[in-house]
Amino acid sequence: MNSIPISYFQAEGNQIAYRKFGCGRSILLAFHGFGQTSQVYLPVQKQLSREFTVFAIDLFFHGDSRYADDQLLTNQNWNDLLRSFLKEQRIERFSLMGFSLGGRFALTMVEVFADCLDQLMLIAPDGITRSIWYRLATGSALGRSTFHYVLAHLPLLTTFGHTLTRLGLLNRTAMRFAEISLATSARRELVYKSWTQFRLIQPDLKLISKNLNDRAIRVRFFTGAYDRIVPGSYILPLTKRLQHYELAVLETGHNHLIELAGERL
Image (tube, rainbow, N blue to C red; front, side, top):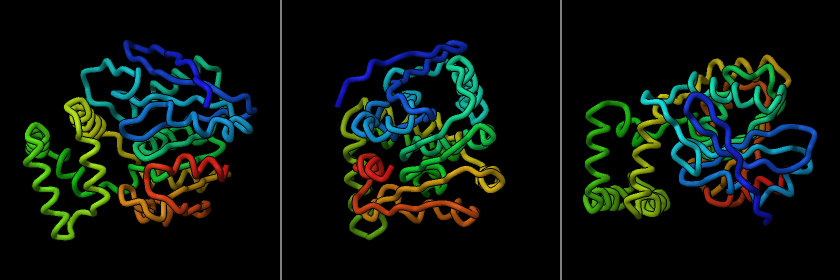
């Protein structure tokens, strides 16, 4: 796996960090999952580079990207920033790839960039089905305050999680994923920032499906047969609206989906 230098785009005090690789004729914007950076796409750069010139982008609060605005990030904020990025790079047409949390950001771009889009590739995408835990933790001031409190008192959260697991209300794999995600104070801060500051980034499935159905955009989903973090069923609210799409169910859980999806490209 070759190291790819990081580049930066500045706009209105915001910084988008990205890695560019490949020499394919088509452009691909790729967004990673929670707790990752653009480096997550480097293991599949060989597969992607055959067809694409890839811009793998660090999401805000991850890697070297910086969001300067005091206001919550919205779909419009995000798309305005990406519009400026595309203009600077002189990109007129492109494809999108999003893994997990990155799927939510890719989906919001379909709302406004559908006329420029060649292909949409979603790998266990977040943003189609919101979990009840996410709604409870971010949907109200009380929920956010409670969420902040339990993150600051990790033993309480761990006890609660293991109780839910014993009662069959929380999958053991999901509980393990949560424990890893919350293992350090820095990661707990990242969870809180990402969950709360991204809470207004919500794809409009009705508009997205209309845009995809009205255009000859190739839509591809990759899900994991053993994924308990973003189960395959989570894509159904969107796929049931689509007239055309491709689905590959891969024999893996959540963490190795990018590598296995890369083998199918």
